[in-house]
Length: 316
Image (cartoon, rainbow, N blue to C red):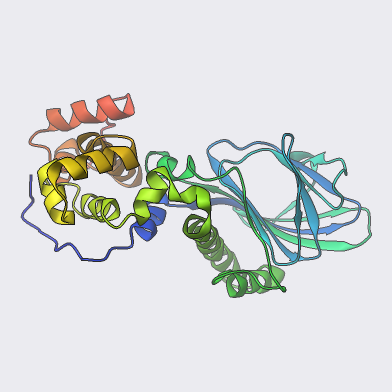
């Protein structure tokens, strides 16, 4: 169903950028740490959360229970998209003390300061735990690797990461007026830039849904679905939008995405519905109209079919 407020669909749309925006990162906790060798911190798993470590001075090891350890140099970033448990330490085999057993100074509701270790060589870290909207972000996060290691070459990180991390280091060093807000926003941008860089350069990102974001035809189809989810999208209409035959587009879409056009449109609509429900009071009638359903009942049936539970009503 078309709404009375129509938007023109641009010829070129940043589908990856739109998808990363839909991830809706929300910082739960940030920590500035001054660590002196020997030291080790055992980070518990945080399922459904992202964790990151940025080395602003010195170096350290990131150790996992079932794969090769990572060595982090000054300015480098390690992102754990699914919040896997790990040990971060001054030496590769250094034992870690449970994170929640280490005293911290709470600087604000979301920002902590930790000083820990044996008094030797110093390492400075800025770390964080981020949440994201599962309904929208899960599709992206499920296809990311268990960790993303942004390595420096000749002391420089790729893309825009270097100046962003340098600015974060300066803000975290003094944490002056408004510093917490600046660090939080910079952290979100740095994480998104790291994911973007991985998606654009990693061979693994050329397959499945991630690969579809970069496909000139299927990517454009995703663009118009995302831009106008309320529209009555059919295989015929989308094929016309991207300049393909109906049969060729249908086969290509299912091959690349792994699901039919109809199912993808429905799942995307329900992802948006869940995000709207979580963000602000909204009625089922409003959601039904915004997402192209003729009635509350039709919308509710679709939501329960995709999400497994009926939509939560919120008072207007």
